[in-house]
Length: 186
Image (tube, rainbow, N blue to C red; front, side, top):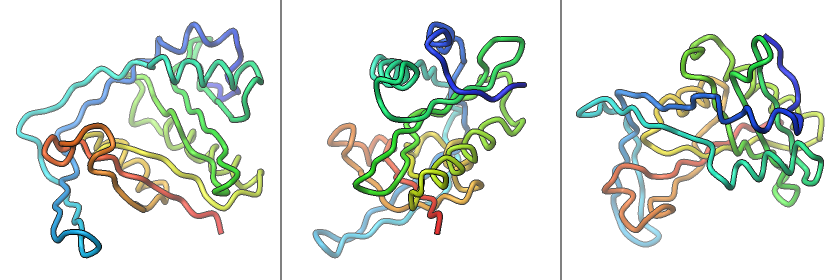
């Protein structure tokens, strides 16, 4: 297994990483109060049925990866490869105004999960942020991507906020609330 920067030659193969999300749990969000007195509680809960959802790299992320790999945009994209085939990917972009490095893409091939690849990629982004003198690493997940939440929590990230309407006006009802994560480096 080799961990290295993504090059322009790798871009066509990155779609081969099977980023399918599979889970039997989710993070349930309960909201109480209104206005400035609103509060939320987060609980782990079992799903009624297991979720298996394809997670292809969308056009926006493909463009971001291309811009980083070609040097047209600032950021870092690393991949793990096995027998010259990509099996895991992480991409992050610096947010200088916030002093953070935001993980924008993280995926490990479905058949190679639970072997520490995602942790190694996340820790490589933490090391990159430290090298750049940034104060934190951030990420975003949804409540129905429980494996990502577990990974970030294990890697020292804390929940710093949520947006119950980021994707639609009914995210709380659909249980797909956006959760923001933060790992302080000081």
